[in-house]
Length: 426
Image 1 (cartoon, rainbow, N blue to C red):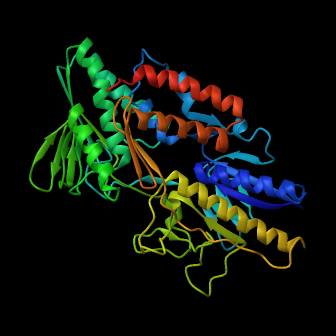
Image 2 (image 1 turned 180 degrees about the vertical axis):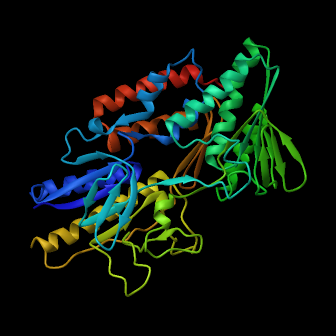
Image 3 (image 1 turned 90 degrees about the horizontal axis):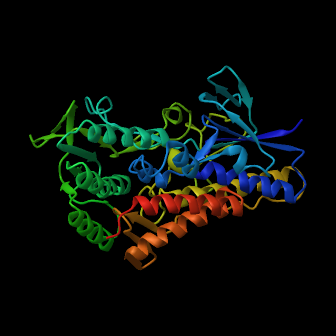
């Protein structure tokens, strides 16, 4: 009977873990002895960094189907030549003592090795009315809902449309700036006025990023007309009104919340070692530790990406939730799982495990139109060159992490054509 390696979640880390494990098993002729199973509630992988573009692409520029094809990729296509079983289902419980995974439709899966790559969900911080009166940007459908809400306001003939974005992290900045750039189209054609405001509790936008990047992004936001309301925490939300802790009340027609994420609730219920905020902690080898020393877990359990908290050994602080970090963690988890398999199958006498070492990951912040700020090592690039670099990074990801080369290039070109028409230069 084949032993089972189960990966929960088809995000950046989950996809990479499947590719790495399949490649290693095939190389050693062990595909018949080990089965890789990927479980996700969707039948596709979503390239989340372009969701802000989906939310701000005019209906006249691209249809819903066209947009879906350039941001979501069917898992059957992604793993066309990969020996992995794909299961569509929502995970309701993971029994780490008995080694069972429970799905919403009643099915049960057994595992010998488990990779938890379930990602994150929106954190509303128990702010009254926030969830009920705001949009989020986590999925393709979320992006469409935002686009529809803005479009409907314009169609209604509103003379002034007020849009607020809660949170000045990368997602909030990207979305707010793109909405403001997109609004120029409405202001010119429909003679309406669209104001976009970012509300942030910290004294700066993009907290934790390089100060040079922050200055460039802040300057760009001011230039295109995005208002910044810093050092202001949201206390409660009612339809059309945001109550701030300072006593101010901000009026808005649309509120989009990007101010926080947390590991999915399922992770919090597992008997694994956690940090103070309830997030699962992994060791350097990406392996999960039991909640108590006397607790014996079934099989080997690994976790990665937004589902966990990993402390940087140099700074003692949690590392940022970045796609590149999840991909690197997936490589480490896959390597260590296969080292144990090699030992069990007699291919080696000792498992040679690796540890995940956080790096200074490059990042790119698009700031409306064909303009972005990118940081690669000590180098900061901004403006149109930064926007070009962003496109090349997206192509690299599709080519080497998701799709066959020809299909990846075709989809990238289609997306580039749509987004070039959608983005204003300047």
